[in-house]
Each structure stands twice: as C-alpha cells, then as structure tokens.
Image (cartoon, rainbow, N blue to C red; front, top):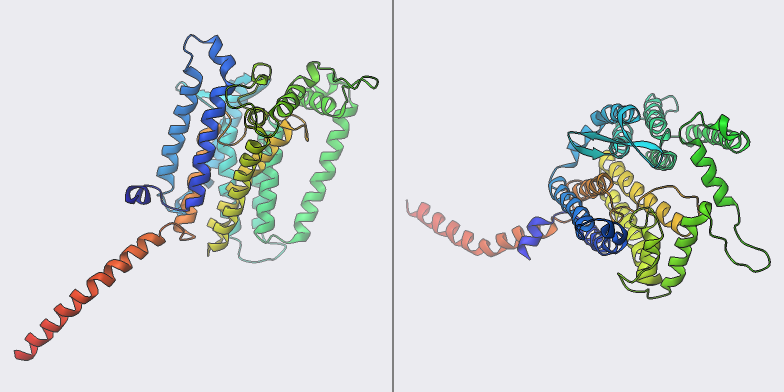
Length: 417
C-alpha cells in the first residue's frame, strides 16, 4: 500500500477511471481485432501492439503526474511546431481513408493533429490566464481567436470532426474563462452563419464542384447516407447497402447485446464492421458486455468530467483550472461523439473512443491528457498528498513527547550552569 501511495500521486478517482478504461480497452481490442489476427501469421500481434502503446502511455502518465503544472505552459511553444507538422503531413504524409493525416519520421508514424489538439488546449488556457480584465477590447481575445481559427482551419482540411470538436472545447473554455458574452455571441453567430452557408453549398453543388476540397465529397456522402432511410415501407426490413453498411451492423451488434451481452470473444459483428476496433468499438462493447457494460463505460467518462470539475474548483489560479477543464472536456466530448456514431445519432466521424479504441498516437496523447489532469490535481488542487501530510503530522505527534523531554533536560542543565 505504501508503494502504491508513493507511485500513484494525485486524484485517486482519476487513477481508478484510467485503470478501468485500460482494462476495458485490452479486453475489447483483443476481441475486436480478431479479423486482423486471422490475416497475420502471429496471432497475438494486434493485441501485443496495442498493449505496448498502453504501457508507453502508462509510463507517460507516471512521468507527467510528477511534473508541476506550471511547466505545461510550454505547450504554447509546441503549437507552431504542430501546425508545421500538419502542413508536412498534407504534402509528405501517408493517406488513410482518403485523408493525409499520418506523418512518418525516423520510422515512427503519428498524427500531427493529435499534437495540435493538446497544444491548442494549453495555448487557450495560457492566454486566458494572462487576461487581466473583462474589457471587450482586450487584445487577448484576438490572440485567442487567431490561434483557435488557425489551428482548426489546418485540421479542417482533412478532419472536419476533429476541427469542430476542438473548436467547441475552446469556445467553452473561453466562456468559462469569462470572455464577455457579447463577444462570444458575435463570434459564434458569425461562424454559425458561415457554416450553414458552407453546408448548403456542399449539399446543393454537384460533386465535381465540391471535389475542390479533398474531403468535401466524403462529408457530403456521409451526411446524405445519415439522412436517407434505407427501409422498405411494406416489409419494414432494412436494406444493408454500401452507404449504411457500418451503421446497420453497429445496430445489429447493439441489438444482439441485450442487457448482459454475449460475453467478450463471442461477438459476431466484429467480423463485419471495418473499424470494429476503433470507430465502432462501442458497438462491440454493447454486443459483448450488453447494455450494462455500455452504461458502465459511459459512466466512467461522466465521472471523469465530474471529477475534473471538482479538481478545477479547487484550483486557486486560472491556468491550471482552465487547462484541466480543457483536457477533461475534450476527452469526454470525443467519447460522446464516438458513442453517438455507434448508435446512429450523428453521421460517421471517425473519432476513436479515448483510451479504449485501438491506436498509437491517440492512445499515447490520451494518456498525456490524464497525466496533465493528475498533475493539476496534485500540484494545483492539492489532492492526493493529504495522506503524506497526515503521516508527517502523526510522526510529529509521536515525536513530541520525546522532544519535550529533551527540551526539559536541556533547560535543567542550563539552570545548573
């Protein structure tokens, strides 16, 4: 127990959530990657790869939660580098699913957008912490808008869902950071009108005109497939075609799960869903662990957001408060987006389930978020070190009689002298 207390500092609830998510990830990724394992000569290859990334991420958490939060102001300097890497990925990157999101340096492949996300969160938290007044003409607002719009625009070219989700989180951070409502309404209203116009043009214009943007045709097809109903009026049967293939099999997986599920390893839809171990892993969780398992996973992310809010409330300065809220909001919003896709509430986005879906860059960066949250809980909110303080107080209490005796003997000797 003493070793665990010394090793795992910071908020214990965050550690428990982290451990449970890792456990679910190992079980479900091992089950969902069966189709990959069948194609490889080494059956254990997919899960060994995923577990390796989890261990690397776990090491990152252990290191980062021992680093005081003030050093995370350095994320501001990483933001320009991440934008440069995104541009490099557009030119020299590897294309996956029609988007150039991956960049390989010295044999290591990663997604620069993941680095841009965490660095932008740090940038927004840092700029808001330097804001000294609520004046509408405060220049920090323009620094915020410039950084957020530039970063989201770079990500938007190849990944609309990530750009939109990151913008929403930054907008919420600005709201929490006491940016005047009038400025936020003007800014948000202008972008909403611009987005509605762009969506209208996207749906009205023909494909050859829309194809100017690399991913515009994909966005249009996903919206159309989401809005169309592929059901016959007479029989009520679902027609599974290319446009609704993923969503239909995700619904089948959820329906088969019932309340308690089919148990891990007994799912069928993992053999049909192309991204069963990533984008649609929540559907596999519902099939194998049932409604109870799906609700448990959802509850873990909800508890994470609640706990992050409690940590932020205990922070006395603005930078750690906004930093931990940004990290928590991004993780939970991404999780809700992934779950919403699996149950067909929103169009397919390609967002992984944080810490559960199979992935390299996303897994490690998610662990970095957890490390930052734990660091803030420890050094800014003072959570997790209370036991050490209690131990020190108890040691002082135990030693106090001895100290009193020594002081009395010393005083007697001084009187004799």
